[in-house]
Length: 410
Ligand code: KET
Image 1 (cartoon, rainbow, N blue to C red):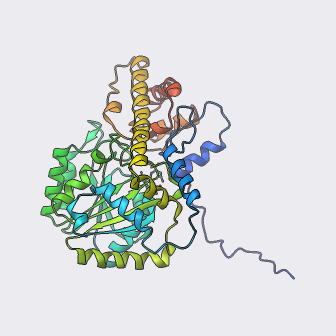
Image 2 (cartoon, rainbow, N blue to C red):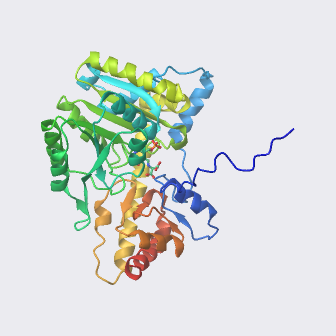
Image 3 (spheres, helix red, strand yellow):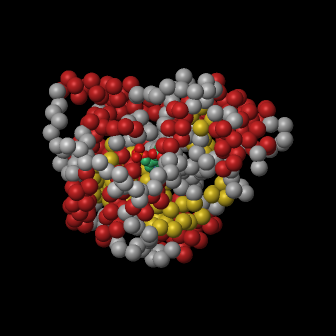
């Protein structure tokens, strides 16, 4: 016997809009034009525009198979060897924070899941506290804080006039925030702008945050991808830690180890005492248990093997330099192509000043839509392009598309 339902009980649920970043990949897959180019999501491709599994990851996976490791549940806080490795990678193994046991590290569902867990901690233990995010920022930050019911507002970051950092505006807005706010900072390779503060500016940012008793909250999704060096890219976080500040840091291994689909990352809370860190960790576990119970093991073992083995660690660094280097090469070629082809005299040198996976082109929504509709170049509507999805062979085509969109669409 079947019971017919004439009117769906889900009638009141409206269609959700596509995700501004991951929705771009869906649209790309549906396009049959052979010229199509996916510069939407920040995912590394080879010069042949194919996804890339790092050699060092394959080696680590082979090791795991040989050892015949089991599939038992991990503890709620994740794999101990991973948690140790990830905190050391962030702060440096000899950092006093580690020796003093002042850090609570919990394995998370990559960067996003780690940010979400930290948001739940803020919502529960700092009710009413505000998170300040940069304008602009990675699109998902707002969703994460909205869903966690954590109030947020923006601080000035990008200055379209200089296509650079609005440092004065940034500092003024952080200063003006209610005392004890959480200040979300991109550890390196700011997404989407590709513009980072200088070391001197980081010092000043730390000064105001300390003055106002704010809590810095770092999102580190690109360690190694900005400069090619893991240590250099962690300098901002280490500068704050060296001042004895309490900090939150979400980490992701999606980009730097190419483990996108393994969902491996961590949330770290640096506290002023080992005792506080132990209590914070216990509460992070308590928040994680009803959300997803415990994290997946595969990516955690890969990271623990790679970071924990000096030979594999060395190989990883070399491969990362290779990836970062390929992006720098297409960045240069794109700039050269734009300068050679664009006779208007426009200065495109901002592209060379930006760092990391992305370039923030300055194209507006209509111009970005022209890139996709006319040229089959898929990108986010804020004008961001992922250079990790570009090849040297496609730079001239992309330059043509950008010049047409910039000059012929208002
Ligand atoms: N933080 C930032 C700044 C970031 O760009 C991403 C991903 C993440 C966190 C989360 O990544 P995860 O895979 O959860 O560790 N950004 C790319 C992919 C995405 O939007 O999910 C992107 O901007 O294209």
